[in-house]
Image: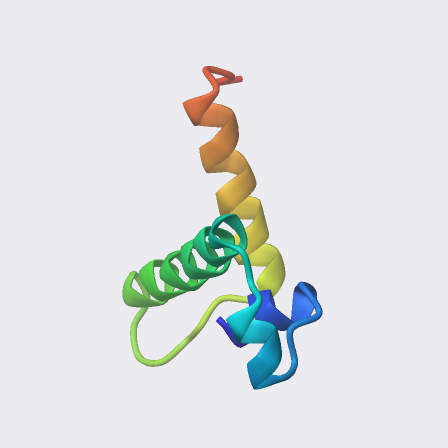
Length: 68
């Protein structure tokens, strides 16, 4: 989750307070995706930012109906 917050420029507690709901959904979605990918692996092997971003992009394209 920290990566998603830093990517949005949130580095202080005040930044958390002022984060809009739609941004929170993005941050929490990123964190949940990273955790889910990690759970598919043996041991503690968290994914890279690029792996999470690629997974989210692929999922979004499938949800939009672009299965190619």
